[in-house]
Image (cartoon, rainbow, N blue to C red; front, side, top):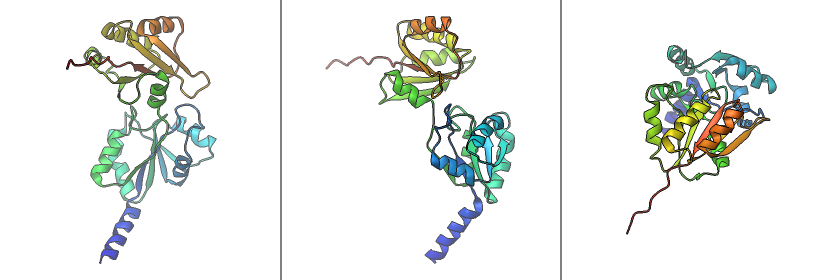
Length: 244
């Protein structure tokens, strides 16, 4: 009976298909794993944040697969149909434009609903911008907090002020168009002499990391217009020792 039960469970897994979460390079196309390439070749469909971006990657590695759009503006409408297709036996890979899906990118909703539905999920390890930025910042790496993108408007100031009490290294994502404004807001909250690091264009030809005080970083980027996606790493608040 136990053997029959195991066989039925195995057959059910095959029939139900599978959802693969596949990280893609954040810049340099060489930064993809052999396993990721194999999965992208084996699945029936690839869900892409922007099919034009993913097409470049697939063309580079000579992978021909059906591409479908899956992004923040349509995921609530399409998630149920996608889950039904997987339950019917389809193997689907989820990718974002760069890095790991669901990390400041679409994907969380699909993964959550797949778990609730009992669909098998496999998330591959791979590229992400936050870890390289943390390592090259020179700040402590044993404990850190990843904040992703700050709220664009409502709650932004309150969120920044709450981070001033954080003793762990802080990691933020930001667009080049908002970088100076964000650095100025951070300087106002943390103090102009607080240390930080800015990494941009990671893994690309013009990769750059600038370290210094928030005032020094503001001055530099006022003179040098930032380009490319940006990661800001902020030193945590120094711990004060408790008296014995």
